[in-house]
Image 1 (cartoon, rainbow, N blue to C red):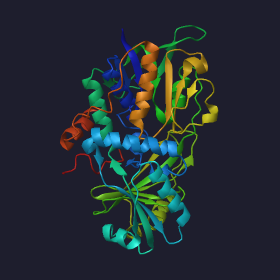
Image 2 (spheres, rainbow, N blue to C red):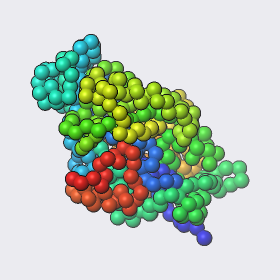
Image 3 (cartoon, helix red, strand yellow):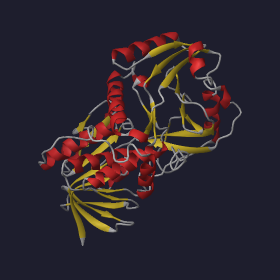
Image 4 (cartoon, rainbow, N blue to C red):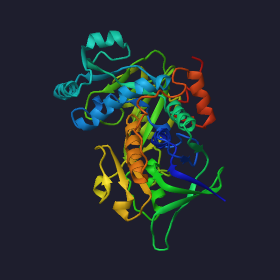
Length: 412
């Protein structure tokens, strides 16, 4: 016996559940499978920043524009999946004033609110900042709670008819001919333990996209990088802190209710499951972030977690790889690899996941001849105004993750 569906989505991170939600809202029969609980991969092991786009404004205005657009959408639909903190880009003594000015001008050119304040005014608003603070730029950054965001998106997908299966790893992908052909089915183990027949299969497995594609005999070369996040007990900080310099290790502090999260490093890895986790990287987070927040000096971690970014080398794209943006790519394996019925989405950020999902849903619906437009930017997520309901969804979909473990289920 097997399960039949229009679309099978493999991967239960924020992009995968976003795709399932979009497809289901367009009336497409959709099944999503995830090898662990939802948000168990990169999504739940990020630093949880909802980007304003300011981080990329001067270097990648296209990507920054996508971030601020999606930032505004998520503020409308995601409610208590976010915490509206705002963010400071902090210029310390010795930091390049020209870099600060270039970022300010680029933000304003893109319509990203950028309010420049003196060091004294900044320290009055955020006492954690050091005396060496010379200027700050306030931007509309925010904190995202990935567990809630993923769980609420999955609940919306299910409410619109999608089937969501956790602890259901894909062990094989099947093609309809001995010498290749369309991908038509998947063998799924775990709690589902069945074969799923699908008209189209979407690979939304992030850093594991190469391994998933290999099950269909397709080559997708990922270039994942690892990063460490360190949570420290600290109450009172209510603004995201970004060091205003070229992106580097230890240049961001994310506030939670009773903790702050320090991030991050970026080191290439060969295997997204097996890689070294040196203690020196943890120490470096304290050393670098303490320059912006001296109260961190000499502190001990409350918890430490590592994540792997799903980076993709565009030079490996080949035919059929459509650069939806500079940040993420849709790989159409029908054009690229003569493999119908199979699409991979790679790259991206938590902030832009909804736009990524829309691009995939547009592509899949065009392939299947399904009419319907995207409505995911217009309909609020279920439970968006009820943190307790969101936390019940997290439990329901086993979506708890290291990123926001100190927040989910905590008394409000």
